[in-house]
Length: 495
Image 1 (cartoon, one colour):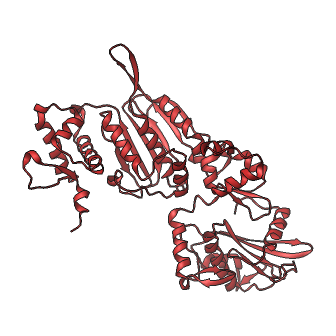
Image 2: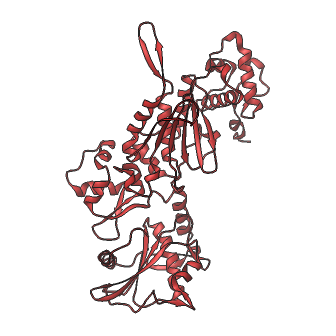
Image 3: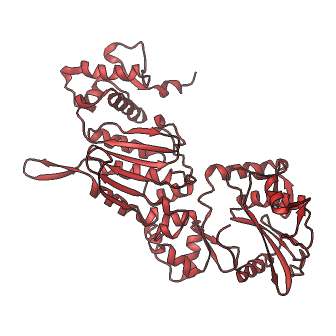
C-alpha cells in the first residue's frame, strides 16, 4: 500500500474524504455497518471503480454520517472482527479473485473513533468477491455484469495499460513535485513559455496527466507517466529505477570484454536527446575520402538508431520487473532490447498502424517529435537501411523480450541465406507501402548488382519466394514483366 501513513496523514486523509460533497464511485461512508459479506463486495466494487476513475485507491470510511459528513465514531473494530474463527482480512483475501491489496486503519478524528479501509485499484482484470464482480455506479454498489458499459470501459483500461496512470510517488507537496520533475524541460519540449507561478505549472502538468491530486487536500501524486518522461532522476522513483536505459560498448563481437557502460539518469522525454547523442558517440565510424575532403561517416544511420531506441522505450512492458531497455554495441552490430513482446507481428512492422501498451507515453513522445506517428517509424528505418546499403534488421522475440539487431556493412557475398531473404522481404515491404513492386531491376539497384548480372538478382528473389515471404503479384505474367509483393499483400486481397 506504499509507505506507512502517520496518524496525522490518516487524519488529513479522513478529513479530505469527508469533505467531498457526496459519496463517489471511489468513496463510501458508513457508521457501524460491518457485515463481512458487504465489506467483501465493497472491496470488489471499489477496486474496479478506482480503475475506472483512474484513482490509485478506493475507500470505505466508518464513523462518518453519510448525510452531514460529521465524524460520529464507529464501534467497528477490524482487528477483532472474525468470520467463524478466521480473521476478517484473511477471510476476505481468500474470497477475492484476483487478490487485491487492502488495509484497515483505526484512529481518531476530533475524538471520534474512525476506521478507514483502503483498497488498491484492479490492475489486470476485474476483482470479484465470491465469484461475483462488483462496481460502483454513482454512490451505489452494483453487479458488474448488469452494467455492460462499465465492464467494457473497465477492460479497456486494462488493455491500454494501467501502468501510466499508476502512482510513482504520492502525497507530495507542490514544492516536492517541482523538485522531482524536470518541469522547465516539459515546457521547453512543448515550445510553451514557462508559466510565471507555481499554480499554473502544476495545472499544466496535471492537464497532461503527469501529476494528479492526492486524496489528501493540497497534496499531489506523480504518475508513472510523469516520472517515466520527466524525472530529474529515475532512481528517485523505486518502481522505475530499473527502467533506466543501459548503453554498453563491447570489445569485439562478443560480451566477453566491456569497454564502457552508461546507465541513464533522467526521464525518457528529457533525457532522449542526450541518450541518442551518447549512443552515437559509442558507434564506430568510417572515413570516406572524397575528391578533396576527408569525411567521417557514421556506420549506422542516426535516424534508424533514434527510431529503434524510441520504440524500445515506448513499447516496453513495464510490468516485467528487474529489467529495462538496453543498447549493446559490438564491432559488427548493435542490439537494442526491451522487455515485452510486440503487439504487432514483426513481419508487419512496416505496414501496420502503431500499437503500444503505453499509449500515453507514445502519444507524448510523438507530440514532442521523439518518435514517428502513424507507424512510419519502421518505414523510415527500412529506407535508411537500404539507402546505406546495410543488411536488413533482425527482429527476435523471446518469452519476455524483443531484440532488434542492426548489422554493420556486409557485401552481398558476405551475407548468408537468412540475411538475403530478410533483405528481399524488407525491400518488398518498403516497395509495397509506396505503391511499387519488387522487380529484378529494383533488386539490382538495392544490392548494387550490374545489369549484365541479372541472374544473381533473380536468385535472390527466388530464395525469398521459397521462404514463403514474397510471392509473384501475377503468377501468369511474362518472366521479364514479373513483379513480387510481400505474401501478406496477396493474403489480404478481397476475395
